[in-house]
Length: 465
Ligand SMILES: [Zn+2]
Image 1 (cartoon, rainbow, N blue to C red):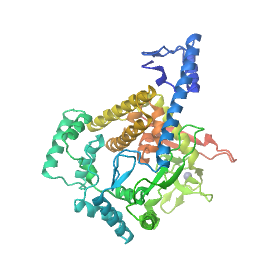
Image 2 (image 1 turned 60 degrees about the horizontal axis):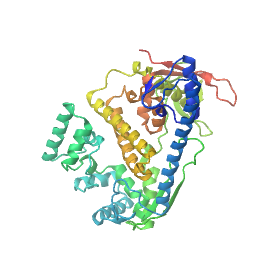
Image 3 (image 1 turned 90 degrees about the horizontal axis):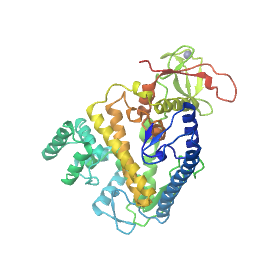
Image 4 (image 1 turned 90 degrees about the vertical axis):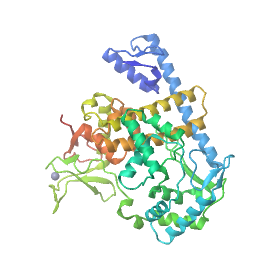
């Protein structure tokens, strides 16, 4: 194996030791371009590499702690931590925000209508009909072109003649093989407003109306660190360094109405079942398992015999350990790099643009991380830039999954660690597509009774080629 830098291989001492053991067993070594090679049987490099792994581990911990601390401090002081301008406000240049009068009017009007019983969706279509702009974005990001093209196709976006010409030109450039990033940079440079982001959508308006910000408050939700032993998620709300647009009682009522499950119908509490609907099957009769709640409230999957379900009714299993097991199996398969044989033929050209763009953003993130490590970039600045880029990645990912149902996992081939980290951010359909690219079905047998979960019940059958 050849790498540019050995610290790309491992971030923890234990990872290093594991890797080095595996290499020794396989009688292999790693060639590094910029650092010394990793030769597990050479005692001198072994000591050196252990020390370097320890340094890398310490650095990445410090970096996380510094970032989290900085964001929390800003939040505690009720400050605005940057990023895209929030609707209704603009930065005052001094860590606070001031009200944008027209936009505040839109918020107050929408709040009144929601409290009067109108749906958020209907208010959105009204705003769109009246041509009320969302935040007019100036910078085109990779997902915006696709959003626009999709929006036109499904009738959500109507283009002016001028806009139509702009989009057609951009499409033609993409077909000719121009990188998406270049096309976007060009649109930005020509000061074409971002079309997709000037359309109101329900989640956008709902988020604006229920944000602590519009009530003059600053909310902080600490992200739970993925590393063990780090502080768990924490959150608080404090008075912000900006005026409220909505009086507090109005805002409280609004949140109650918008969060009311009766209002949102059955869709409000979707429970994610990764394996029902055909992947998990009854080991007794072969029928698919269905979602079912145990009396304890735990999610379970069961073989059901009823008028419209042809199961034998003789089997039930708790969902969580099965899902965890299958997920681990799948990410391991992706790590092995052999998944190329599971992923369907070449993705369409559009998807390839997206893939290239994602790789580019991932590289940018890695570069920025390196700059932070070298002390050339501040942690807060990194946080802001990284936030935007992660957002872009998620958007691209969703587009990619839509274009290439069967090869939803293409970007994770050989990168099981990335898949593992991204798993919770993937949509349920993307997760299922990725599982489906590796696994034909999961048979569940009768288990041994007892308090411990019997993993021998799970029989994973690989996808047939
Ligand atoms: Zn059955």
